[in-house]
Image (cartoon, rainbow, N blue to C red; front, side, top):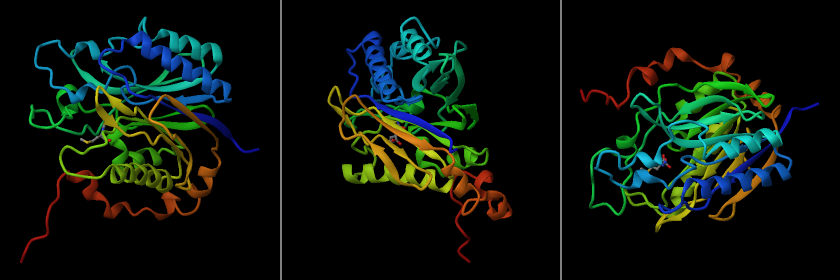
Length: 310
Ligand code: CDT
């Protein structure tokens, strides 16, 4: 008998500055119910799923950005989602802005089990963007101002009869992130994202932006023999557009399900977890084929070291 896990990618349409937490949690609750109705046991919500993508805005007054952060998880406002999950016996991944109570702030996600209890937490490692004020840009990308890089590494958990890991948005463009989990036998990676349709640093067409998103998650899935469930927050938030393209990717690298809208939308797929084993035992049998003696640069340096010119 193969191991199967029916999962949902629960994409959110825009969340505007004026939208309050209870209205957002209501939308998440509706999608959790929909995923349950589809027979899913695990649902992946987006990155920063409780608020607008606030790092596009420069706030310089002390405390001005505090309202975007969660000070406990679950809180009174998010608890209905956790309670419903326990009632329906369904687990989920939820991205949110974390204030840890000791003055540190992270772009985080939690893994919630079918009893509504938090099983694990991940803090985004690869923070994109800048920390300084660049008011001349059409919008900003201030993750380096509002968050610290994650300090928890890339752990995996035994959950839902699988080995499960988490990533957040920009992490998906970094092969090292997948590989660290691949080396722990990961079988399903949950990943939420908010990706602006326009690159503020370098012109790119929306088509190319979507291509790079799919290229990254499909390559990460294939090269590590894992399922990847990538879920967007999409559409125009107060006029700032982000693309959709939420998808469920097989260990073959193929997209098995994807959203078609930029609204709240749930897509599901019944994942055969044993499909991972085939690739983990052949093309990507790490223990037989990896040559770590040649990989030292990967952990020894960040930037590029050019060869000498003489
Ligand atoms: N949220 C997030 O990480 N977004 C980035 C946009 C990078 S452009 C500065 C992404 O990789 O999709």
